Every structure is written in C-alpha cells, then in structure tokens.
Amino acid sequence: MTTPRLLSGRLLSGRLLFIASFATLAACGAGVIGLTLARAHPAMAGTAAPPLAVRAVTVAANGPADTADERRFAATIRFDREATLSFRVAGRITSLSLRPGDRVAPGALVAAIEPTAYAAAAAMRAADAERSARDAARIGALVKDGATSPAAAADARDAARGSAAGLAAARYDLASTRLRAPFAALVLARGAETGETVAAGAPVLRVADRTSPLLAVADVPADLAAHLARGTTAHVWPTGATAPLTARVWRIAGAADARSGLVAVDVRLDAPMALASGSPAAVAFAAPADRAPAQAIQRIPAEALIDAGANSADVWLIDSAGRARRHGLRFFGFDDRDALVGGLPAGARVITTGAGFVAEGQTVAVIGA
Image (cartoon, rainbow, N blue to C red):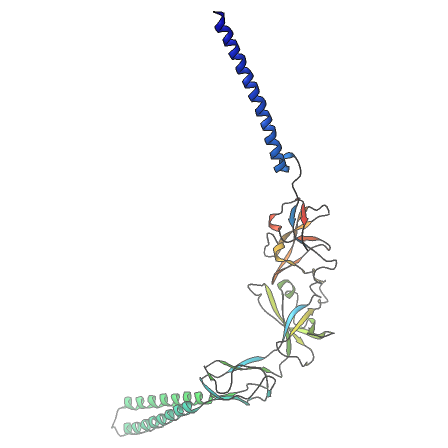
C-alpha cells in the first residue's frame, strides 16, 4: 500500500518541477520579446519620438515684399482706346497694305474685299426697287379712276417699301467690303493677308487710337484697391527703365476677378510716351495723405496655408526651440503659386512642405533649402 503513495508523490513533484521550468522559460521569452520591441520602437522604450522632417521659408528682415503702398505690381502698357477691325461680310481680301507701326488718318481705307458679288446683289435690288416703285405709282393712280381697290394700292406701296429696304441692305453690304479706320489709328497687329478669304467678323487689324491716353494696367489685391481712388499718385517702371514715370490712377474695376481675387486698375501716364502697347511694366501706388500706411503684404508659398478663409488663414511657425507653433494672419488672396498674406514677424520661419502633418508643439527638423 505504500508503493502507490510514493509513486504519486514523485509524480506530483515532477509536475511541479515542469511547471516551474516552463514559467522560467516564459519569463525569459517575454524579456527577449520586450527587448526586441524596445529596439524596434524607441518610443515604447520611453525615448522621445524623432523630429518631423519639414521644409520652411524664412521671412526676410524687411519682409518678402514691401508695404502695399510701395510694392510693385506687374502691369501691361496699352492705349485706353484699342479696337480689332474686321469685315462684317465674308470675302477675299484684295487690298491690305498696312503693317504694325503704320499710322492712318480717321476714315482712311485700311483694307478691302472682292466687291463683285455684293455689287451685283445691290444692282438687282435697285432694279427691283425701281419696278416696285413704278407699280405702286400706277396702281395708286388706278384707284382714283375706280379701276382697282384701295387695298391693292396699299399692297403695292408695301411691296415698294420692302424693295427699298432690300436695296438699302444690299448697298450697306457693298459698302462693308471696304474697311476704314474709325479714328486716328496706330496699327498694333495684323491678322490677315492679301488674297486670303476671311469670314465675317474675323480679325484683320488691331489698332489703337493715337489720341487716347497711354495706360499701365495692373491687377492688385482687393484690399489695396479698396483704398485707391481716381487721381491717386502712382509710379510706372517700363522694362529697362532706371527711373519711374509719374502716373495717376485712371480707372478701377468694379469687381474682383472670381478666380484670383485681384482687381484691375488702369494707371494713366501723365506725359505722352513712346511705349509699345502690350509691353510689360511695373506699377507702385502712393498712400493717400489721409490714410496711414497699409499693412505689409507678404508672399509665402500657397502650400504653407492651413484652414484659409475669406480674410484669414493660419500657418505653422518654428519657434527658437524647434517646435511648431500655430500662427494666425490676414489672407488677401493668391497670386499664381504664392499666397498674399499679412502679419508675419520678420525672421519667422514658416513651414511649407509637411504643414498638413504638423501638430502644436511638435518638434520639427528643417531639411533642404
């Protein structure tokens, strides 16, 4: 009877020893796994996360742009009165000798198309009008003698009037085969050649009125345009000019462009200048005497903006400790790939690439230029 008890005790001791050994191996395995995870994920081991790689631009000491009143805007030189001349009827051009730079007097013939078909149509209409007029006169005389009714005479008169109107239209078409200068014109461009068949309304010549003012047309932010008025002093720098030309605001568009948010402003040069229409220039505006200088308008890459609204937006700035800080500013619109903003401190570093992945207070590392 003692043998089974002894055997049972030995079996129990062996099981306990096996369980202890298994627990020891499990603990060792857990330690190895924990060490492996700690090496693979430093944050799990209590170490700080690496800085987020971003790109940034630095706001210059004097701002990326001058103040709104001193900053130059791209402009295009043109005459206040320019027109594209075309024939109102189709045909083959038989006369067109003018070239860009030529000058013509008001009413001068500038081009002509083959008139044969239009002359023939006018002749047919003239004959029809004469016949209708004779018929109306004859039938009207018969009414007095009682040989016909007043209604017949009225129909004849109506037919005569219709024929006369057709003749007037045919003669107008014939006259339209000759294109004349509407004013004292300077030829800017030529869109057709002699011998070419053109459709009605096709551009033939682009001309400018030599007596109209010379303008510099610029697109400016709506915030600046709101403070401009007719007569505001401006300066124009034609391409290659070493000194500005004196000018004044002549016309301000009543609405901003739907896509860019910019307003077209026409600036009139005070003195006549030999500048080619279409040539590039730059325009700057002086602040009105009754207004304090406007807030500086600065340019930053558009990708730097976050949560942009109608008049405000946010950006991420990098503080002295290398951490991202959210900063609110004024938003004026876009100009190509740049955002026009105000309120950035000089020397500030603005995050561009990576701005959409930054969190408040996050450590960042600037890479690239």
